Image: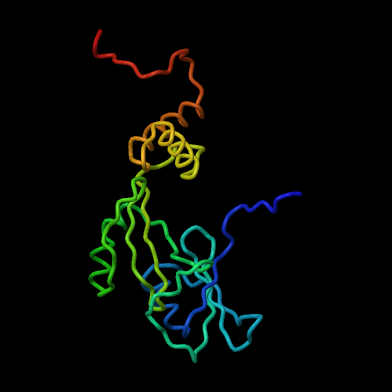
Length: 195
């Protein structure tokens, strides 16, 4: 038996309401360029809009002019999507509360997740959206997932409940040490001020 190995998210497709609501939210609120437009090839009564969330991957929306936005929370039962999270820079994140407030969009306020900060709000169709901003940058040659895996191992090894910044810092140090060679035989922390 062999796996069907994934190599990243290709796209996520959402059932939308009318075309303009999708354009106004995905591009007009979240800044995702509207990059491609064609009919839904499986349902000719629907449009299929494509937006770039910032990494070249795609968020696509099936639209139909007969559907109207319903802001009621989308289902959260087993098998349903709970929320979609989008990465934003620290600079953008620091402005998010004010920019959501300016538009009158209800939100959660800033949530401390230990390794990132989050803000949650609903799109016009009731889908929960998260703006997420990491509190760290991975060392060169590593990903955020590499740092989180290493931080998880450190956290579990220490018996701590959740990931905190100390686990991230120690994980980054460990990965940077592993990922870069040095002429030094002893790369442990030193105190050059005590000589």
